[in-house]
Amino acid sequence: MDPATLTLASFLKIVTHLESRDISDVYDSRVQQVQVLYHGYTVDFRHQLWRIQEESVCARLSKTGSAAEQRDCSRMASRLFVETCHALQQRGRAAHLDTRTMYCKAAATYKPLRDPYAGMTPAQREARKALEAAQKRAERACNRYVLDALSSNSLEVLRLRQRYCRESERLSSRLKGWQKQGMLTNESFLHLASPAGRGGYRRLAARGAGGLAVCLRRGTLGGPRHVPA
Image 1 (cartoon, rainbow, N blue to C red):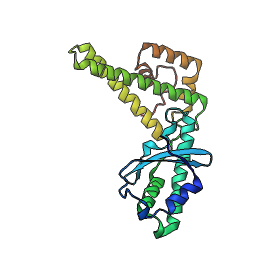
Image 2: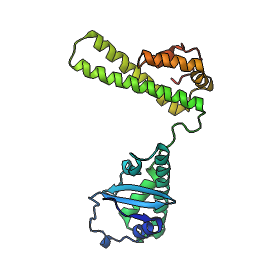
Image 3: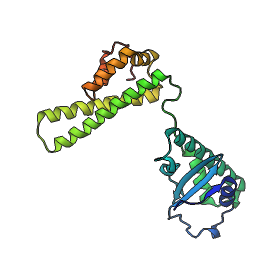
Image 4: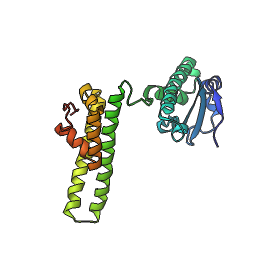
């Protein structure tokens, strides 16, 4: 059963005026579900042992909401934690210590979801998604041949396991490097988004999981090899 949705004013009044005698479960040992209407968004989360469970924040939208809705909700959740922490700090020693510590820790550590394609042009988004799709295919193939190798001594199975697992790792490192450094150069994006690039990618996709990464690495798509190391 879903908990009642509290208005922001009601929620802040409850948490800022909590006293030890009001709390029967002093260790917060049972999972507590909270829902707050915050600036038009229903922010939901759970806490236990005086810790907000980050994976539970906006969990209501994890199956039914769009990616954009989940990002907006997590952004509002972050603001709610900050505002709650500030309100509890203003209460000083009158605030319940464990409650204040819990919300102030969440205010400091909770990271709202971000749009992985923010700031990219349509061409850049297409190239990023192509690389992500290639990595996922390589990972699935790697997992498949890892399982096959458990029940087979075939050299071909072992060769394919090594090939796709290496390809998955290589693409993963490229994606991590991309996230760290920002993005590929515009020339690479524009080439991958061009008709020639798209055609080449379709041919590579038909070839198999590692095709795109191999050609990106060798520069055989016809464009510059500006790929994160």
